[in-house]
Length: 231
Image (cartoon, rainbow, N blue to C red; front, side):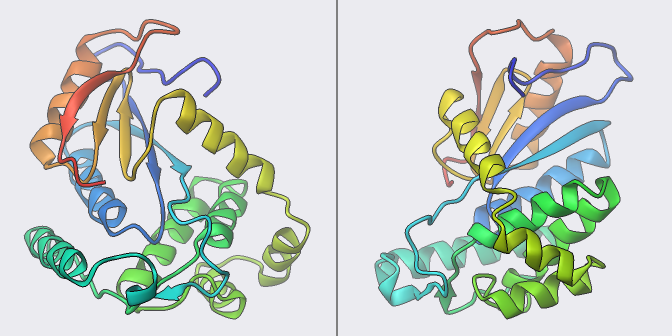
């Protein structure tokens, strides 16, 4: 993505969308589901990018009450997200802790190297483990169990985590995010059009339409296509 997000011209060509998200971000989980709804309508080339939202959390995470979320704010956010999930027919169970996602993001990168199918399976398994099953993705034994359930070679995953094989990739993604002024998750880049937060399907659809109609200017500024403002 060194030259900036690209959108291929042509009515039938897939629109490329870069998605910056985190497996412990509930809005990323909702946004993922909404984007998949859009993909049922429009040909999309979805490129997932890691964006760690809680890099300073300890490896095992923290209880919600200790993770910096005021109780009233947390309660309101949960109610809002639960309503969104119902509208998507999406299972959602909030864990009572906030996990450190650093190694989970690395596992997803490991799967990406194995191909699209492996990455998609692992991507879905990580979201399901955290937001449906309430498992702590920051714990090594849990993460390896999820990797195994996704069909990955557990010994190879463990070795990749131990030798820090994907640390550089996470850093590159963070640099990309800074370059495109991405500060929250999820953020969708449809060509030069940016959508921030778990935006309604109508907003994603509009950004996709704009990206399809307008060829990307190499090096041009990313435009704002709107969003829910709830990253």
